[in-house]
Image (cartoon, rainbow, N blue to C red; front, side):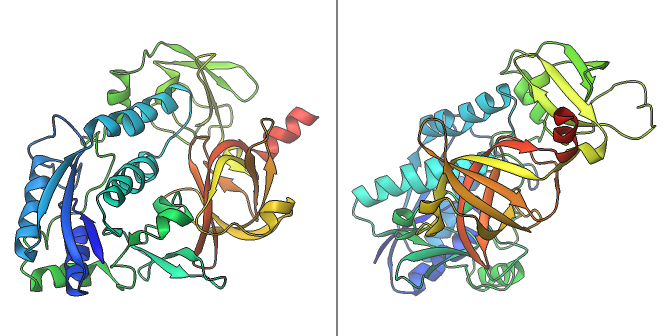
Length: 378
């Protein structure tokens, strides 16, 4: 099989490519240049897609004896990931750029070009598994290593894309074994730190980065009853569940900490309240996709049992969900967790599971707090 190995410059993609070569595939390594002005050096485990990463990817391919190329996807990345990130925050939502990158870059733009060039599959170092389902179709499943499982950020993959994905690290029990294997193979990235944070904000200062791209203006901070309790420097820089940076200056009447409950960009208002007002008992999701075949209930609108995860490496809770039509006739999901969840924000991604199988994902549009809903109904 002719395989394109996506080489990030990290240890996972290097070992994944090595295993693809060892399995007898015809492998070509490709590093994606996602910025026209990449940083020269990483800062510890922050950032990725730097000149150092490109060099590490090249060295890994040299060691494996496979061809190496760099493809410039910087313009597509800027439009589909960076600009989307800014637009979502400007609209008061909390996006996940890694989901968007997988959806629009690694398993859309990259896969499309690979197939056009005659490749059969794209190989990555993601910790997830593609397995045959009972109906013969392919399904996306969690990896063997729960601590490193990345099936959440791959929940955007469709059945057609799964047919061209290769995840050689799926059954590896731990990251330590991957590093040990890299060292045995003589790969220079064996001890390289994993990248964290948002790759295009390597210093981790999301608020400062957004302030350079969104017109932030001061506005009111109000409590759940609409009473003004302070002032902010720009509503779009806040996200649901946030506590730090409110700078209200005086405690709540009950003396307890206050958290961001809602961001209203059109009114330039931030709503705050007690921790209990972050509890969510119903979620609506828009633009849902199924990772493989849709469940039969998707056609009937019936409730189906599942498990819900709304953050990468976040908690997983039992839930029920159903697929309905929105006002435009498109699909939407209603999700009810078995217990209240805290800090769910519009813009995040809700990924549904059944056992180890990823059913699919949707972008969270609304998250209802039972206490606030009861108050508004009174």
